[in-house]
Image 1 (tube, helix red, strand yellow):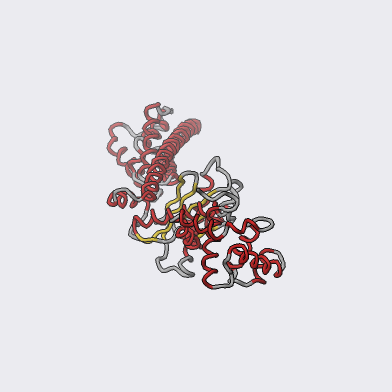
Image 2: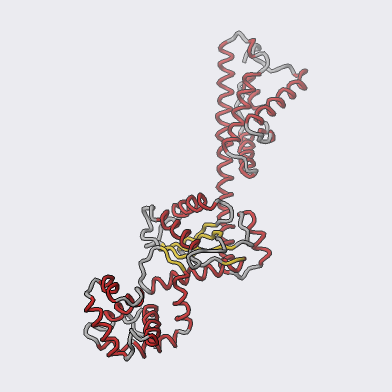
Length: 406
């Protein structure tokens, strides 16, 4: 470098430091108040490059990378950190002492090239350090989130510890929550796309506070707040969350057909575990019933929880009431399907016939065969309750496709 482009003499070192401090403060303001400490020795690297053409040493670049990691840890966005460095470079170059009075164009070009090389190398190193730190933070957050979800769903962890661990994720454990589980049609090789899709949809609707999205045992798990005063027999919030999740997941190329089960809303920490158990039982029951329903509400399957709680009694009921139907031509299954639709539509033969795609006469004939073979009359109020309970139990036990448990 020529003497026409030089830093102020060492005698003016105090003024030099004051000038660089002013540049740092102005660059910080340009970047939205990013701490000036994140510049480190970057300004000195710029002035040295302009005066002597010196390139940063490895140790100096490592220090810049460490500043990038610190920016990520402090929650400074990557854009603001880069803007801090670019603004500082612009101000240093524009305010560099005596530069505007230099009459040596070659020297100015050389100084500019040296400064731009420092800017290019330093910003790239800053961004790399920032990215490394962000990846580490994301991995750490994912691990903490997965552990928190596991403990919440298990419901047997220390309450005080759970409240403290949930706070950074914005989860207020005093609120009413519900849990939804999404099961893919086939195992997903990568769940990241599904998690991202769910997070976008749920966060847009409910906000990113008080919502957790994670994976557990091959299922996608959503813990979301719920209105404790539900409508439509308590199924309003569940249906909304389940429909929202299924609609978003169904857009993905992989995983279809998705099946979403939603537990009922419950308050407190243990309410989350209870809602999860309900959602898991609902998903299991739907599979046993060979149900292809896309969104399953645990509220709709409460009767099966009651029936299957005493399985030996249910097996005895099905054996006593329905096994005689196996003597019919074609077996018991057509008669069971007819009973199921007949009860589902309010004992209206014409509607049952429409659902079964058969004639009304066929429905009437099958109901008569049920009465003759079992001794229970579907039209009698007392017999109707017994028959309906037995039919529901048979569906839950997957009889007659499978033999009754011994």
